[in-house]
Amino acid sequence: MIPAFLLPNEEGDPYSYVREIDRMSAAMSNGTFSPSDLFGFWPPAYQFICALISVFVGHSLLVAKVFSALCGVGLCVVVFFVAQKLTASRKLSLIAFSIIALSPLHAMYSSFSLTDVPNAFLVASSMLFVLKQRWLLAAGCIALACLMRVESWLIIPLLPGLQYLLQRKLSKPALFIALVGPAFWLFVSWAATGNAFEYFEVRSTYVAEAVAAHVRLNSFSAFRLGVDLLALMFSTGPAVILSCFLAAWLVIKRASRPHGLKSSWPIAVALSYFFSSLGFLVLAYVTNNQPDIWPRYGLILFALGLPILAWTIAVIKDRKPAKPILVTLVVLCLSQWCLQVRHAWHFVGEASQKRVVAGFLRDRFRENDGKKISCDDSTVRVLSGISASSFLDSSELPVASDLFVAALKENRVEYLVYERHPKARVEMFPGLADESIGDLFQLVWSTSPGAGDLELKVFFFAGGAPKPRG
Image: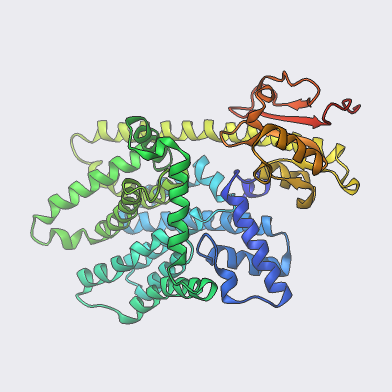
């Protein structure tokens, strides 16, 4: 909860979610809201819930961050109860709880306006209800998760499969409830566009454009595979992945014994959730439907795998070769935690630099004189408190150098915020990186040492006019 109030969003998707929340909230306030307003690039559950709350309390950005943080808190609690169900050990359950509660990456992404942690909370909750054999509640969680992230659709066939294996029967109401999520999303797509599968076409177009824009995504090179594998390991954790495969091997060995599988059904349920989620991600990746693997994609695997880690420790701790395995797991957990602390420290350093830029613009920019700021960084925009209408995105500007400068003059741009980025329009001026830019752009602020990998600069644009005092 603390980072939700102190940290700004990560750049990119979190602010896109907030814009969707603002759009839905405005429609609700105006009385014009309809099912078609739910359609967008992502399924609508997270945006709709936050928009509904924002209608009454305002502050959509804070509402989105706090809602995500509450789900992060809930996920820690669910991990504890799942681990307790698997191990019957309060000590090991508290260890699993502590690992996720003290995870810097989990804390960070719980504070961002993203669906990864809320979705993980719903999926993990459904797993807990399956372990308690509360099938209707498990199906309800999955239905809501399916309206939050499409990868949760894979869990739907898992529910009746698990129920049949455990009870030799199927709950038609539970299956119906789980199917409501995808069915409602298809209805929304049809109501908004006339095509029930429009979302998948939009998603396919986006992926095709992303692959076309980045040469490295056109093939599976060793470098690309290595980078994506490290990103997945960074968030999921090698200790969790190792313990899940070890647990799967132990369950397979038990299955060969009389009644072995029956006694292992709780861990089998947990493993089915973990490997279903992992399998979906791997399948999407190798088919290029998910060109990149970001660290946050492993957060759900981290949460689903921690109770399995606790179970693995419980099973092997009394065996003869247990000590080296336990030491290895502890070392891997500590290494993951140290790397995540380093990552979080860099993020905080970069965020502090963006706060300085936002404060600089807030102190020197006057909104009432009709001038604008060229800035692509959503964090700087939000932290500055300057109205969105005063900002100009570089994607709205022409690519040619002379036309770019002419567009800056035409739009009365006063300040230009430069952040090194492969697609940034300002890359056409090499001097912006080395500051040899003469009178066209005059440097007024640049990133201080210790800001991580961030390269952020603020230029006064006057087309040759004198640099302003102060």
